[in-house]
Length: 80
Image 1 (cartoon, rainbow, N blue to C red):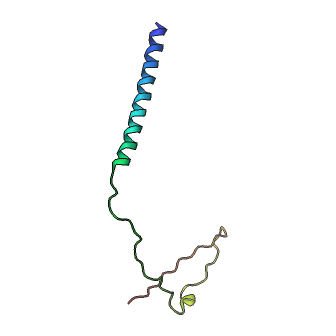
Image 2: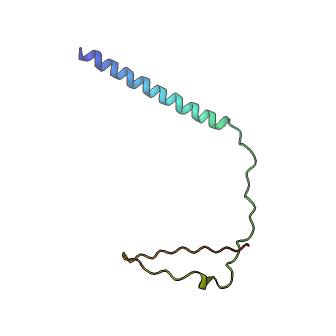
Image 3: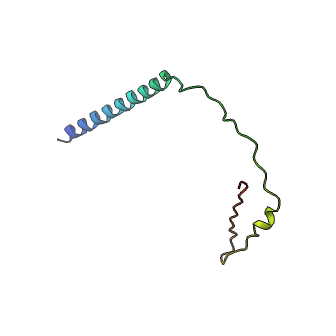
């Protein structure tokens, strides 16, 4: 009775190994056969804008909270 269970367990493991090997091979084959979607390139970007004059006074210095951690958020709008 136990030899039947042991044999079916081994068959299950063997089938699982074969399925994994075939799926891995198919994945590699499909990756190699796929054409790239299009030309690759860098996106053109302009220079980073500088901060407006006087931004230091518009953004107050952070002060520590009760835990001693510094947290600050300053939003500067440069366009009208």
